[in-house]
Length: 189
Image 1 (cartoon, rainbow, N blue to C red):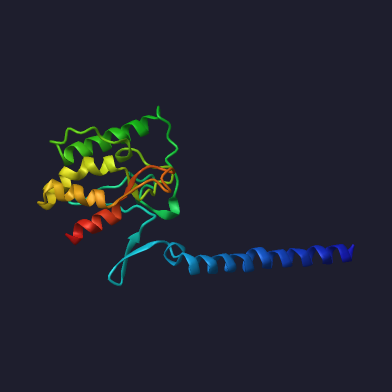
Image 2: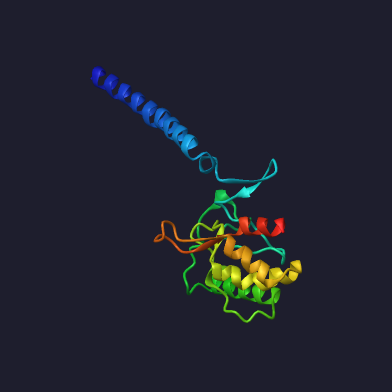
């Protein structure tokens, strides 16, 4: 019996070291070697200061910036430690009220905009942290941003086009615009 316990304990320690230490160190080393930015969280810097991540949305509320998808990580928006959807179904009155409120806020922010409001501007993603919006959502906001910045709509549309990423490998996902990168491009003009 003692020899079986000793063997089991030895195997437990060995597997713990292999799977809990050696393997993670090896994989992290490979990632940092071949994908250093992604392995470090895809942090976006302005000068020497970290200002966000390409992977987690930011809470932009000023009219001169593009707004991202609503965050489902209340009460603090885009809180990575609270990642998850709202889990509210389409008939849930709380979701219906939230969407109505978001539509009203978008209409109040640009009352002359007659474009249809894209779904991704009024509904949160499954993670609640989505850093990207559809090109249609960016186009919807373009006139508001152009007015707030006293820029031509053509210049804003050019920035949207320059910051639109196509489908991955041409087939996966949808075209998208990273809100943080787009807003940084706006600030650069």
